[in-house]
Amino acid sequence: MNYIKHLSAVFQQMDADTRLTPYHISLYMALFRRWNLNFFKNPISVSRDELMRLSKIGSVNTYTKCLKELDRFGFIRYEPSYNPHRGSLIYLYSFDKGSDTGADNGSEIAVRPFTNNTNPLNSENATNLGERAKKMETGSNDLEMKKKEKLRQKKKEVSGYGPDIPPLEDHVKIYFDEKGYPPVEAEKFYNYFQSNGWLVGGRSKMKDWKAAARNWMLNAQKFNAYAKDQRNYQPGPKPGNLHSGTGKDYGEPL
Image (cartoon, rainbow, N blue to C red; front, side, top):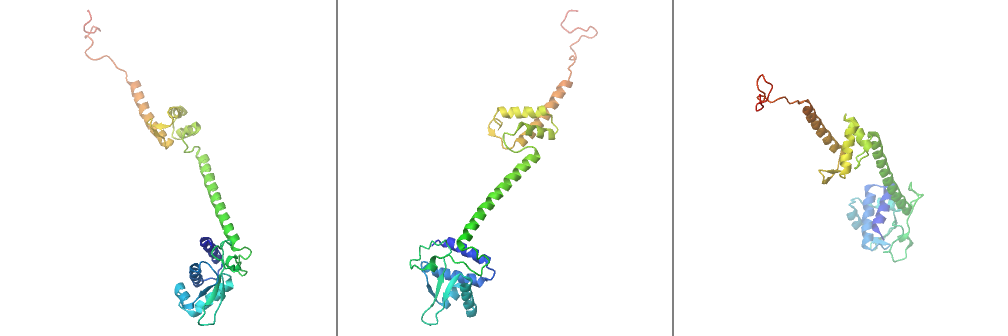
């Protein structure tokens, strides 16, 4: 028997049953431990003192009440023994899709998924519950991924440009326009990095084209300021090169 699948199905059943208390769950786990030691063969013979010690239940009345209710709720079958020399018999139902390889006694109870008629989920057995939960989990993950992708695309459309490298030239122009730069400056930036494979410094792969664009804008400001200074600069005759009153340079015949 696959005890992981079994316990997962049992816990799903317990989660749905609002009548259960921590004592029921603790007692069931104590029974499961004894079942495991018996190689998942039914029935198992139990003693009250041992189960109370394993389940941490201190009251005999609570122990007896929980054992009978686990039987009535459909988790076990309880056959009490009134012989002080013979323990009570417990049959545990298998909830792992009926693949009980440990039960070789041919007991139907050992391999039959049990449906609790008093449980709100009585229209489905433990196998269907497990399959349904698995499908819901898978579908939920797919839906979540689709929502994230849709949100990413929406942000990309709203902002007008995305983080992809290489970016679209139109996205570059939009970004430069937002920063107050003409389209020709955006074209210079795009053509330069398009020609070198979008490498920073000619070696490293670009990670953020917007950051590179801002650096380009800073350098463009410095270059434009330098070019403006050069245009405004008009050099005149060097002092001392002209002869006073003659208009002739020194070294030329008078």
